[in-house]
Every structure is written in structure tokens, then in C-alpha cells.
Length: 149
Image (cartoon, rainbow, N blue to C red; front, side, top):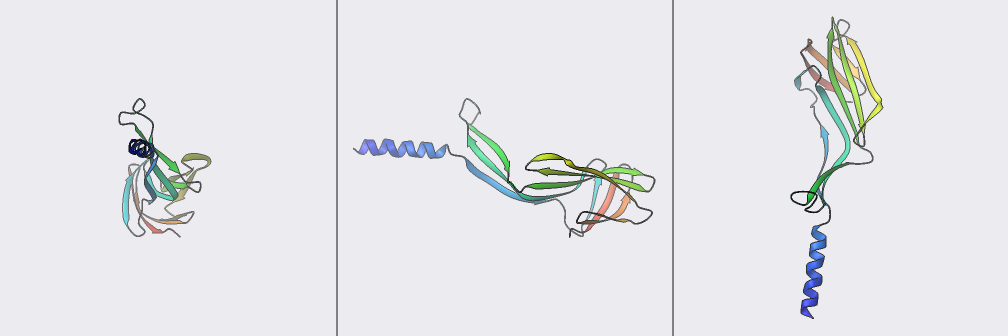
């Protein structure tokens, strides 16, 4: 009888070890209001992520992976990632691109390009972000996020 319980207990432990495991759950902002930042043309100026990405380890077997596990990232249903990208300058006009991702996928309807004439104002506003442009050329932009509200 003791051997039967041992086999059942060992089997339960083995099966539970193969269950998926939540490794990490995180929200993310790549900026701090008031901090001076510099980035190159084509690079992301800021990332604002709402919702969560859950990283899970799932047992897939030793035939499918060297250690038997695969890591998967799964965005929550309310996951939105917003990116503002510096695209360059022509004369005194800077161009910024905006991308939005929903549930981990780029949303084509949420991609747009905007232009701001720095001769009119060195402070630009896009959605809830106010950005002070300190300097810009076709290689780099220096800026400060004045507000994210």
C-alpha cells in the first residue's frame, strides 16, 4: 500500500512540475518627466506601455527544446504600447512617427506621422505628452518630457 501512495505522489509531483509557470509580469515606461534625453534618428524617443506582459515558462518536452521549456510572452487583453519615434528634421520642421501596439501586435490604424515647426515653438504636444525640443538635426534630437498628462 505504501508503494501505491509513493507512485501517486511522485506522479502528481511530476505532472505539477510540467505546468506553466508565471516568470514575470511587468508594466513599462521608458521616460521620466523632466529628464533631458538624447536619441538618434529612427530611434524610439519614448515608450508608454499600459497593461501587462506576462512571461510564462511552459513545458514542451525535451524533443522540442534543449531543456524542455519554452518561454512565451502573453500581453493582457488591455495591453497598449505607444511609441514616439524621431524621424528627422527638414529646415526647422521636425518629423515624429507614432506607433501603437494592441495585445502585442502593431495596429495599422494607429500609425501616424506628425510634423512640428520649431520656428513657431520648441514645445510640441502629442496626445498627453508635452515635449521640449532642446536641439535637433538629422542625426540626433535632444529633448525633455515636460508632461505626460
